[in-house]
Amino acid sequence: MVAGAIPSHADGTASMAEDPGPVGSFAWKGFNWQKRFWGGAPQYNQSFDPANVSNPDANDYVTLKLSNPTGSAPAGAELQSTRQGFGYGTYSTTVEKNINLLQKEVVWGCLFPYDPDASPGFNEIDLCEASAWGGGASYGESWPVTQGHGYWFDASKPAGEGNSTITFDVTNDLILTHRLVWEPGKLTFETFAGEGYSGTLLKRTVMEGATVPVPAKEAIHFNLWVTGGGGGDPAHVVPETVVVRDFTFTPRDVPPLTLTAPAPTIGGTLRTGSTLTANTGAWTAGTTLQYQWYRSGTAIAGATAKTYKLDKSDKGGTIMVRVTGSKTGYTTVSKSSASTSPVG
Image (cartoon, rainbow, N blue to C red; front, side, top):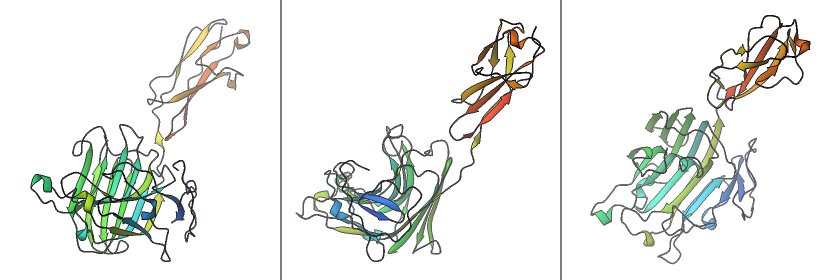
């Protein structure tokens, strides 16, 4: 949660998730959420107003509003989860907004997991984003409002180079349901007309490959803001509202990967006073290795280094070493060497 946030809880109607995140502005759909009160990007004039995000109403809906009280200084709205780190799973939201009527300067940044600190700049998966990006008036063009599915994989590169996006036409449907399934190396986006998944499938997008983001410390965001790019008249937009009816997240159990783990061998002379070395072979990069040496099948106390110096108590016994590898996201694996001949 951003430092300085002042909690102002509303009654929630859903039981809290196992990890709802720190207390924020209110609880909703099993998670804690923070209304954005700080300025900055992406709003063209850096202005956001926490009053532009409502607490959940009697229907358990949250409304985001774009305001412009002076007529020339609009303020955006943003809602984000206080939990960081959702990861693989199914994300879904139902929203109420006729995107066909969206002002060309306004961006409806519907549900998107986002981590500003992930390398190489940030990760962002846009489950649903709609805009004409200013309309193009400064270029003598008039761009239509479109919506899109996509993600950023390299924030150091401009749009079109550091991201992968598919756009599609908007419709007059007042209610849309969007679903994202995030798996290792694969993203599946779906947008349906109406509430739930029984309506017309408006667009299905599958993106695969090495550039698909891996889980980091992403939070869930919804935002409504004004872009200064592409022409248009951002200062004089009129108020807009979007109603977020629902949000769900179902985590995906990802089977742990298997380490590359060869059996070790033992190098050195089998004579008391000599030092033996565990030759581990090539394990998966980044694996942490631990060692345990054995004498005639019994673990030797304190013999947990890659090398072991034979002493008189080893005379006549056989020696074996067990190597255990561990790495986040992988199953821990142990491999044992063959036993040596008796120590001379």
